[in-house]
Figure 1 (cartoon, rainbow, N blue to C red):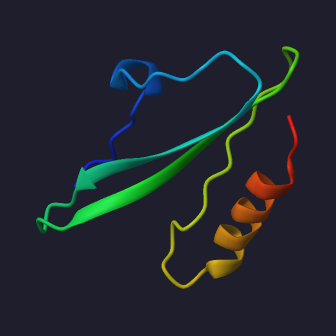
Figure 2 (tube, one colour):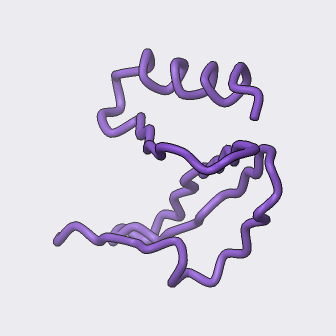
Length: 78
């Protein structure tokens, strides 16, 4: 299967421009027919600045990245 790059702007997802945390689940169907839920969190600060992406869970047995991403979402206060 070829990797797919998704542009959130093209997905017609509506994020607010207000500072804060927004969370949603993107659901994709695997080639096996199974539905896969991909959690997405957008943390928007009060002022423009650098941006970054945090991805985790790429390998099923690596839980520390998932826990680190969850902790980041909880602790960052925009």
